[in-house]
Amino acid sequence: MLERHRVRRLRAGLLALTAAGGLLLTGCSASDGGGHGHASDGANGKRGGAYAPAPAPGGQWGEDSGEQEGEQRGDSSGEIAPSPDYLSTFALDVDTASYGYARRTLAEGYTPDPSTIRPEEFVNSFRQDYRRPDGDGFSVTVDGARTDTEDWSLVRVGLATRPQEDESERPPAALTFVIDVSGSMGEPGRLDLVRDALDVMTERLREDDSVAIVTFSDGAETVLPMTRLGGHRDRVHDAVDELEPTDSTNLGAGVETGYATAVEGLREGATNRVVLLSDALANTGDTDPDTILERIAGARREHGITLFGVGVGSDYGDALMERLADKGDGHTTYVSTEDEARTLFSEQLPRTIDLTARDAKAQVAFDPETVAEFRPIGYDNRQVADEDFRDDRVDGGEVGPGHTVTALYAVRTRPGASGHLATATVRWLDPDTRTPHEESGDLEARSLHEGLSTSPEGLRVAAVAAYFADALRQGHSRGTLPGQPSLRQLADRAEELAHNREDKDLHGLAEAIRVANQRYPD
Image (tube, rainbow, N blue to C red; front, side):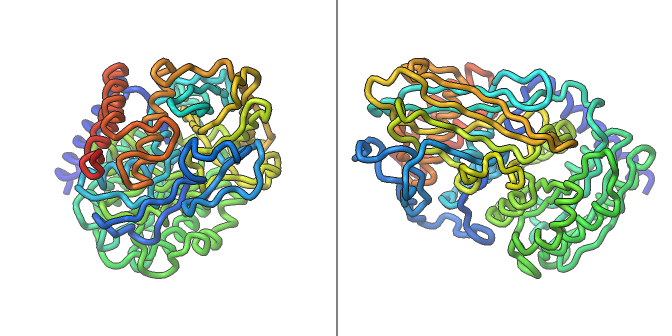
């Protein structure tokens, strides 16, 4: 037993050093932490089936668009907003699970279910080099470029928080890990991946951080109460070593017990968070996210305990995990390889435990003198009523240090427009005092770049990701966004950007687009 523990600790230490070395060589992801959109129920298990493409919102770009004014917002049924306006309001989102799951699905030779494609999560999966604010809060960047479709442009709204320069400056963390040990987690790439990642993370966290572990299958139990890591790391390693798959998946019991454990071990002055690790294939007990989270609503609201969902597995309950994170004031990501899991738990999670903003919302005001029509690309389930932008009782998004959030819009400008085009404003609450703050940025029509090819690299990266998501959502080689290239052209653009930036994540995007092109040939 002692020899096994010694080998395990040595392995964890080497992995932590490897991950830390990787941090020096690679930039911080745009999603260093974590969109919510339409998603199917259960496991999205129609693997490889023929999915009917969702209709384009409001018809084809440029087709009869002269008869439409203001915001043209629709769902997958193609319905248009009943009355035009020039405001777009949404809760901030740092999720990336949709892109990670789509990439794995394609790699395994299947067609992603269009209902699991959330364009904002594709866009936010890649690094952006926005100006960072000097202190807490956000910087606001607004730019755009004209497309090949007449009068249509892509406008980018970029929000960024300060980096976490010194991890010792953050408050201590109290993390409750809620781990799925149901039978489905026994497949390779699920519980084995979770065990290795938690071993690495345990070595990466600080001495004054605390960890609790809850497991669930047909029921739930606390296998490790909230434990200060200083002098007790072996207790965490031992609990992780004992994780074994058992029976069915009562996710509701796991979340409820997890929050009860988090409240019992609540630490004042610490960042208290529940981290759910699961394939979200719930088949026992409550499976409705609203019902599950209503039972723990008091813990969320009174103590500000946020939920971070980590999805694993080739069959994955995207809809359930996404809704849980949305209702739990948190975000989601998806990991499919050991490298991804180790990076998440040894680098991203420890660096972004702290919160810099609560209930953050953005509102973009387009100028009717220069804008004839606009449509948000994604953020379907994150939209907020325009009149609720400054109602701080309405939930927004929770954002930590080092995050960037990008929103893209397709915008049809009026012929010859050259004046003010849009103002983007972000509003958030201080995590400690709940004092509201706002920051804004503007864009003039004359400042639009003449084409995407001459626009900043970050805008081109966001455009490629959005075009790719739209093509997958429509279920063919071309999507419906203005200036939409073919998948073949998109792959070439992604590869060029990857080469220019020396960015392995963009190489991965190029490869995913090429694989998709084989599923949806030109």
